[in-house]
Amino acid sequence: MQKRVSLLAILAVSATAATIYASSGVESAAKPKQRDFIVAGSDGYGTQECLASQSNCGRIVADAWCEAKGFKAALAYRKLDRDEVTGSTGSDAGKATDSFLISCKE
Image (spheres, rainbow, N blue to C red):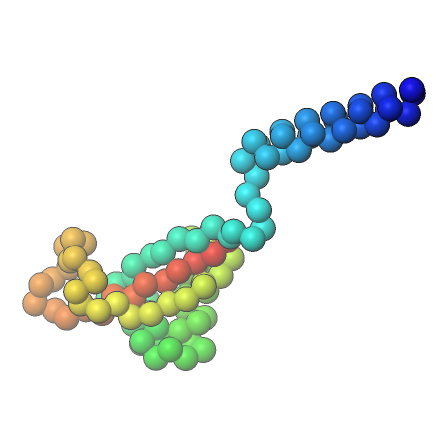
């Protein structure tokens, strides 16, 4: 009889702990948080030259951008087509400026 009560108590405590953990908002390690940033090539830091080349220089710049924003590293980066950017940032319409997408992960 005591073994049954002990087993039921252990099961009840385990179920309660699992429920509390599941409802606590803790995200699993399988789903890292991701955020995308659009970076103008004319930002003054020389990002256009490195990001456009798809070389190690581009990876370094993308990783540094993500780290500066509080993320671990860049998942990916690429040049955006002109029709992917709305131009809502107020840049000069007469100047052609490349923009880049940097995807960061936590």
